[in-house]
Picture 1 (spheres, helix red, strand yellow):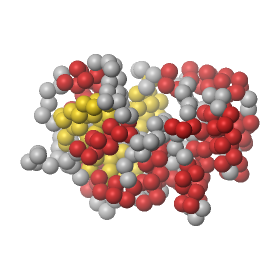
Picture 2 (picture 1 turned 180 degrees about the vertical axis):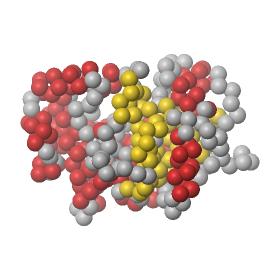
Picture 3 (picture 1 turned 90 degrees about the horizontal axis):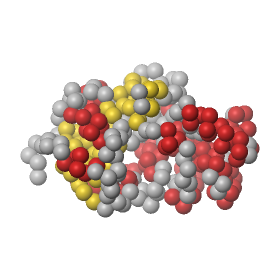
Picture 4 (picture 1 turned 45 degrees about the vertical axis):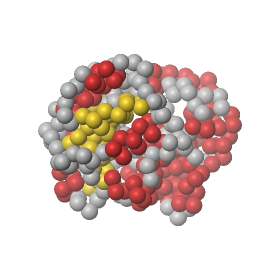
Length: 310
């Protein structure tokens, strides 16, 4: 049992991130706010990620080495092992600016009645940085309805969210039955109960290579079932619009991956009246057209569909 409880518990899930984990950890060590612990969950990496992690001899680090159970399980285990009231999630290949925790601490001090905090992110493609395009009204640090604020891009991500651990008593943890999209599923549950204090300043870099943009793997059974929220969305217009965008994204992804069953399911769930003309055209486009658009946007480091599914 640690005698001094830190202000933040930084929970990092790692699976085969040998190429990135040193930069990720160094971005934590260089934080100007120093009152934190680091819980690193090595989720069965088969490269030398664990060896690199062990080379960092820092008393702030606690390492959990486990079999490969997936990101949801590893994050949940890290959260459960954490000591602090506030949990800061970070993926094993992303980078924080040195003022990140300081800015979040200031937001917590300014809005003590709130429980969920986040900031803007930028995408990092090698040496190129591309800012994320958020909803136009996100001009200052204040509380926002998650669903409305995420109309262009989700304001929550697994490397830019900090939350009071007590919220999980209402929302529950990451759903370990969802392999891809478990982040969005938890963000929905958070949005149903809590507003988000959003800092419209880039303090986090989401690092990835272009191969991750193609989304070549798709399995309907491993994706969130947004029909689980039908009762909640009936009286909640903002939630309905948010879910509609995600269903649209999954319909596009299923068509790209030639999954007719998945496409028919998500297409039937979409409220076409909420789609703009471009989205309607893409939804009706044949797979070869979508493949061409994916290829051209991949070169520019962009995705074709709504950005809540990153």
